[in-house]
Image 1 (cartoon, chains in turn green, red):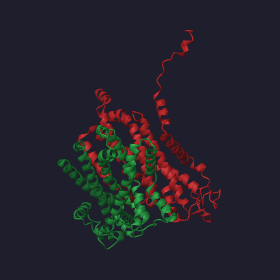
Image 2 (spheres, chains in turn orange, brown):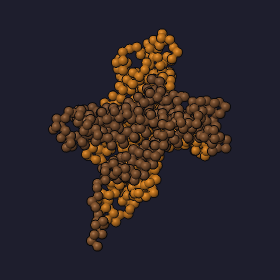
Image 3 (spheres, chains in turn purple, cyan):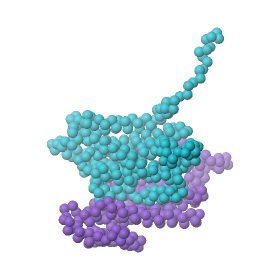
Image 4 (cartoon, chains in turn red, purple):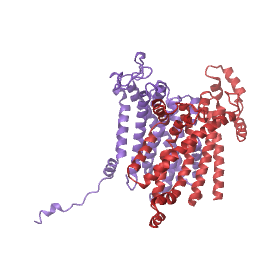
Length: 305
Length: 300
């Protein structure tokens, strides 16, 4: 187990490094940054001035080396747009996105696990069909549209919740629902599949034969075994949600990391964009590492992969 | 008496041809039928958009701005689904928008399918170091936040239909690679592959003519799911202003353009959103249905 964890850590770190290279390359190769920063109407001389000023005239390898050398010390340089360092901007916004992601995941788990358990116990009943319908419809709706529709219904129509902003906890309800709804179907289906698997096993039959109450069998004996892969998937889903926060945050004007990335993209503020891409990737890598270790702890066969 | 019995003895049934059995299974699968109908309707709408559209989708008329659909009191039969903020006919834009969505879905699936299948087949067939490299690339790709990377790159290159297709094609190959890799691993040691090898077939021949046809059903399923994924992402990019550019009618763009008016005219975002969801639902139902129908045990 220890060697598995060590190997996974090693892979995780090298993937981080590769992502750093890739995100740097993507932004430097897909266009001329100096032209983008100077703006479309600027003269060639202006572009050159910008190029020297931002250090974009140095060889690519030097630029990357300097950037990475600083990035491992969590120093992503200064924003092109604000006077602040990138880390100050990120530090200000990250808590909002983590809060949003945390609440969204909590909502998704709280709905998905009971629904999944019920769907497994009452297989092919209306509960099962309903949960399948929720999953199928959920995957089909575009998330930005679902977010707007929630505003129309709950903020404009029913006036229960605020439209946008992030000053109180109420402001987080709709964005968290909009974000969490997309994590729910896969969590629910996995809970259902895991429960079906476990409920058919010999030890559950033994537990039932011993005369244990159905609730005790389901929750104490079955769910305990089915839940670890679900938790592992939940960790991965949280990683996806942090990446998807850019859309939801822009709809609800939540001042989080996603909104920061989005604003920085439209302002050509590339140090910030690079940093956010890398930070979200690092979170995702960390969360998938947790998921892999959880799964490996449960199933020793996974460790040899 | 004995002569009349000849007819009632059961004749040996000729085996049902494979396609008939497939068709029967498909028709018995409710999701697949519903999905196919939705998809066929939208595909027909896209195909015949120039004939079905009551108006030019680009024709603006500021005197006819934001007319609600015909079933509202203020609506008119002239514009069945109303008009947008520039007075363009909503139904016509919706029909032409189907072309954009379907084209993006197909083109993206083609590009990403080519990349992902190549990687997956090579990794699965050769194993060892090739497999390790491909798995590493897939892991790295999965760690990149798709929406964010696509947005950042589209901002640099400049958003357009072509850019969206290339970007999504270059980003969405991961599932193709994962699925073809494991399918190839299972088939690598099959007898028909060993037979082809024994006959002296070259490796490209084995991969393309022996292996690939056996991956087709798995590939079709992944392709439908990635089409749906690409269509949703195009809508997202266009909604955020970095995908398909105005005045091209894209459903995601229609939602973005209607956003400012949604509080008083909710239908401007409801209509394109519902159609988008229907298309994705149809594709997903077809994909899931095909997976069930082509599964060896034929569960449905």
